Length: 382
Ligand code: GMT
Image 1 (tube, rainbow, N blue to C red):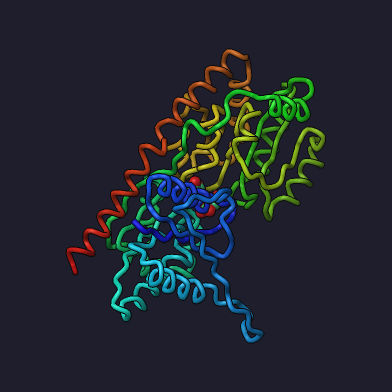
Image 2 (cartoon, helix red, strand yellow):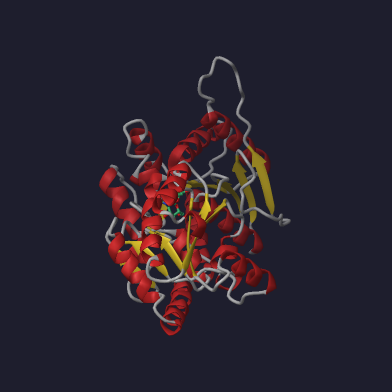
């Protein structure tokens, strides 16, 4: 099939899922057309079945705000017409679902009927989408979608709770490719680990886009409590609006020399490979791809129980869950996992085993089935 994938090209989870999905579909023989304003960060090498189409908004001094959605819509019309796409798959509702709807209507005037699938990822529903500035458009463009998928049961429940949705929604969880994560430390990883933890300290890590919703201040508080009991280091990977506040908190708690701020990293696996524990105390989290990627590298997870996290992190097996903000319990659970090499190794093994429930092999056919369904429906209508 010829599939147009509309996505955010950044380090955010929705962009990562969309890119990895497109790469996997291309490997299976589909022709994939990524459409965005920048080359997706995880699109690190090209495959003969992959194309990238850049949306270039038109800058004019009259516009205080550049009308990106219109530029995207025009690009969608253009790519569907000239590449003969069978369908559009848009990731993150804002503004991709309404742009796809608009493009679909324009294409109808050219005698082309292209179905669009909307995948909701999280904050497009739980935080941003339900704001009155967007809600009517989001409701409409979800209802007009030929199919809707969400990344967890929790997000499905939230979508029905916050929006007047008339159509069915299918849960298709985030995925990983089990073999592609690092487990054995090579010479390079050993060196990196030594630089960060020269005396064999335990390494805790957190990775995100440093937004408020991630509660990174809890990460630092948990780390402080752990470090007060055992030698430990913390890696903070990613970047975003909370970074400055977090640097200040590290100073206040006197842990700066034990915290490495990595900035954005291309490969999550590089960090997980040298880590003992992953912390994700989010306020809301529709799924928690970052946690799943840690599990796939055999790194147990200490997380909150918000949103879809209980669907990803199995309490007492792949790690532990706690109420949002309960840093006391999170630190206690972290110390339990790190209490002995035996316990740590047990959790590491369990983390990896648990991650296999979300293998690409299981998830990819679910997306393909949705594609088959929407294109078959279109042929029947024709
Ligand atoms: O908020 C983020 O972490 C980024 C956001 C996005 O849409 O780019 O991630 C969301 O989508 C991911 C992929 O489906 C999920 O794994 C994340 O849980 C979700 N983030 C939130 O719900 C906060």
